[in-house]
Image (cartoon, rainbow, N blue to C red; front, side):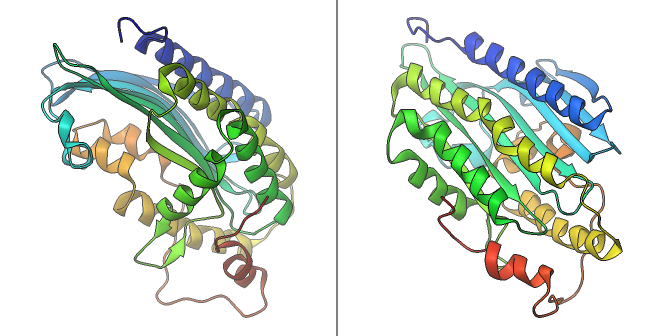
Length: 308
């Protein structure tokens, strides 16, 4: 990337700034501060070196748990989950950096949200570098609201519109397929957008597209959080929220590529698992009462749908 107009340090600076902007907005809404856990893994301490900044808020006024993490790690041996997808980069020196967040609001009417933007580059002397961007955002409601789903998907579409007419439809489908619990035959939520191994626009425009996704996250989620944060709820709603959070745990630990990459590469477990919800329940073979709001989540929202 020496001759490129965009460098890895440019990407890193953007990601650090994005993390700071998101944290500042969330602290204004919640009224409590995120703690900062800056960590470093020196070379020789394991298969990867590097570090990151994990920002965590627990037991907040609005967020029961929220994590917004930045990491920048490197190594010379790719973990199995990455090498299997791109065998041509096996044995190369690699760097991976990104911002990843998961927010679990306290109010069951406010949805959980996930967002991630990341950059990967693998280099070898005398060879062209192999690089790509990845990311996206998706919404996981416990009680569905049409206007929330429409707003979230419209903002995702607006973020991608300047970069190609077909990108939103493609990335929405990719999101629907990726955030799907195969063992349950059930979507994790109402989706959003997801992309990986993206390089087709060239370095500058691919980076610009990733920035657009990251920059529109607050526009996509904060209006929903503001609408739902103070709605009245009771034990029934909290109980259902805890039950549905179990699906979130199942997906992250069984299917998520980012979690598998981090754990298989010897990453920092505490930071990798900061996306886990604070309170979760499982029940054997449970189904919601017909005609209830809980049943409506399954019939009207946990389906593939063109929300915009």
